[in-house]
Image (cartoon, rainbow, N blue to C red; front, side):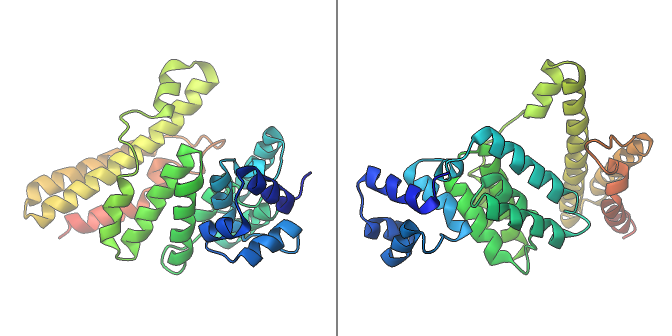
Amino acid sequence: MIKLGEKIKSLRKQKNISQEVFANYLGVSFQAVSKWETGNTMPDITMIPAIASFFGVSTDELFDFNLFEIEKQVDEICNEAYKYRFSDAAKSEQILRKGLQRFPGNDIILNNLLYTLDYKTRADEVISLCKTLIESTKDDSVKYDACRILATCYKENGQNDMIKPTLEIIPEIYFSKLELMASLLSGEDSYEAAHKQKNISAEDLIDMLIIIGKRLRENGEYEKANSQLRIALKIMDAFEEDFVESKWFKATVYDYTDEQRKEIEKLLSK
């Protein structure tokens, strides 16, 4: 397998640019680029997507990998990390960091890594990584997820003026891939898509009802507000009869909306 430094040098020469020009684009010294190309050092992991973007290649192409095999191994890493995402974020992050040592700059691993980072204490890292993915990834799902996470990070850190411009990068879509798969496919493929979309739709609807309810309460329209909040509670209660499809979920909508329930009950008691 070709070494990264050799690949960078080859791509740079194909583009017919100097080390200085390339270094200026990345915001590093030309000496750093020289060390990469000679194999004395490696670029920082977070710079890999930007390097790939500059040369117009995928991050996998930078490393001359077999894409099918890489995708398979990356999925295994991310699936293993997901097991600990909610119970042990540090362990999940550790698994993904090790994955990045094998596949530096892989967009999917970096996207999963964002879910393990605390938006408050590691805001700078989250923002930097999101911006890198937005600018360099060729995977729209990664790009728009990074937009969502970036906007959320801005919200949690009081950078409210940055939220709307970030969200405006995301196109307005009135249907999802899961909806279409559920409707147009058949058998297990349709069932899986429908089950996943059911939970997503329920969570989204509950969240929207709470947001509307809060806004109406702010406007003093308590009767309307409470009607929205009660509808949200009814939706949660309806899912008490649901079952867990353990292949894809660890709990039902009823189980993991407990915090929203407490919030609604607190609002209704005022």
